[in-house]
Image 1 (cartoon, rainbow, N blue to C red):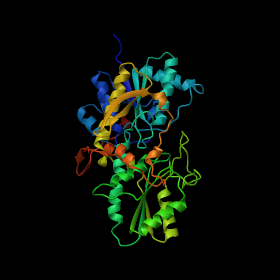
Image 2 (cartoon, rainbow, N blue to C red; image 1 turned 30 degrees about the vertical axis):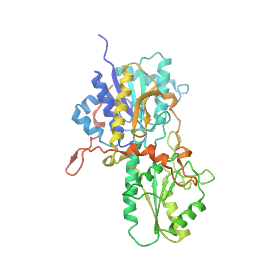
Image 3 (spheres, rainbow, N blue to C red; image 1 turned 180 degrees about the horizontal axis):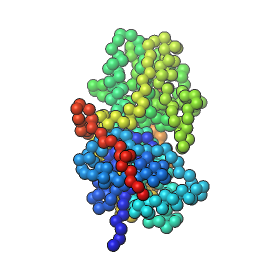
Image 4 (cartoon, helix red, strand yellow; image 1 turned 60 degrees about the vertical axis):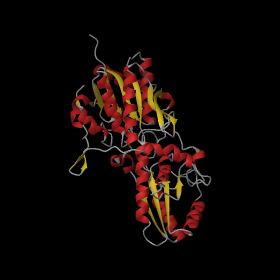
Length: 414
């Protein structure tokens, strides 16, 4: 009798509020097709150390899967491990393929961003060259929304909803005093401005958004920025600024860079926060008014209590699709979303070649940035507004959310 193929799922890179919805969708899809499900503990790095979780034991039923899909963070743990090239370290790939064969794995699904898709691409290419029948599939995630070959990335809608919500609430709080004041809200976004731009969604019939939005794609002069703040203060008491952490000056360098910041294995700055406080100090010193910086920080990727219902639903569907097509025989693909229309909002699920996604970065289109480089256009709002729609409640216990605990004490011996 032929051995039943197992599905092995991993999570990598920075978490999102809906990354576990993709995991839940992948698990459900595998079970519906009769495949046992394993999980990597801490991504590909954990697999290199033989750390594997039996998900059929850790998350055994629909009730636990429902809690999992609303739990933030990476349930399986994460890593920022860069696989060496097969030419540099073929023994690493041989060891990984040997481990997968020993476990009886037929499909590997890896939930992550563009660096994670690089991992899937490398493993898939090496496996094909070695004659392995194992299929390798990617499931997209990132709050940065910077994956190419698709309309948007799971995780972004929820982070955008959180940013817009916080900006609206901060505006209510900061504008109560009859004094000239400036509030600078810093969002994540080292290389791209999708999250900074999302702050503009706070402008609705009942809410106030930022007067100025600074993103990495539109370098700005500090003098021009101060002039705009000054002109706004001449006609209103309160000015709100939203700035991506990687906003740049006209020289192309970050407006603020933390001295001695470390880099991760992929060459990304491990920390680039601080531009919000820097701009607030600059405004206070140069314009002589009250100014404060607020950094939204890690909450942008883990605030599952302000999740986008649409985002969670799409994340789950993309996890399920990747596993299904992998079990059907596809390899080196990534599940993705293509937009059919804005109004009414409609998307189509599909699969793209993972090699088209690996290590590429999609920036905010220049046509969606205001002419002065300090705002976004109505085109961006038409694109982003549907992504933050809907709510999806979690289970509550004693007044706080119920989250599934990580399963690292339940790793299995290989």
